[in-house]
Image 1 (cartoon, rainbow, N blue to C red):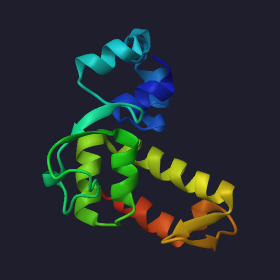
Image 2: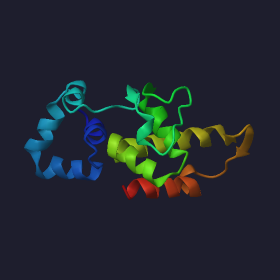
Image 3: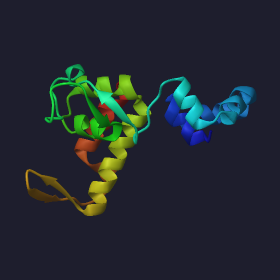
Image 4: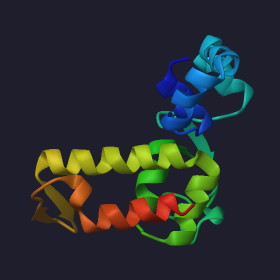
Amino acid sequence: MTQQQISKLLDIPDRTLRDWKKNRHRLYNLLESLEYDEAKAKINAVDIHDVIIFNPRKYSHNLFWQTNEKSEQKVYAIISNYLSTMNKDDIQKLCDEFGKNLVKSVLKDKYKIMYEKGYMAISGIDIPLNGKYEENEIYKELLGMINDC
């Protein structure tokens, strides 16, 4: 696995991995020698592109209105939709279920895309976005909630 894959799959900060690469050679080399898909399957981890069985009863309310029962949903869609609610309990559940790094990755990707478009669409109204996404107050607040997980 690459350092990025290890970080994402095991929810280990890059800084820690760099330290392991210097000071814990055998552990780092072991992780690096593993195949990503094999390690992912062994620990039952998910990636943002995976489709999983989603149970809406775990969260404050069901954002997937198609059904009140369990349904197949993409991990990215689940994280992205529940981040938009800014519900601290739901964000905690996302971190518990998918890992802090994966939730941060989706947040960053979502805001990058919005800022590349130059606007945010809310209820049919396009709100122009200026500056950098990292300076957006809502982004900072969500990032703070994820960091507190």
